[in-house]
Length: 131
Image: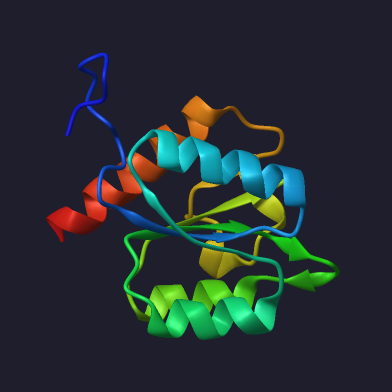
């Protein structure tokens, strides 16, 4: 689908889980995804709710903040991984601090741009739809 200016919307029809505990950043992520035609599931601010949502919702991809109020989001990543739902980490930590099983996953360093976020998500959604 194209927007008013005739551009293709990168995330048209994609359902993106957003797990982020910083309110303003979550709203920015939501705006960026919606601007590109995506639908938001969330934002979710804690690991317990994120695990439940990741396990039951139909999702195209996910954005996971690594540290949610002192709790790491690795259990959410494990659920997504089991369901073969692509995801990326959005974090201030460096990628080499991730556990070995997640070091191959895309990682956006905070602060990141809308363009970097939507481009990375579009890649995940495209790769997932080709599987």
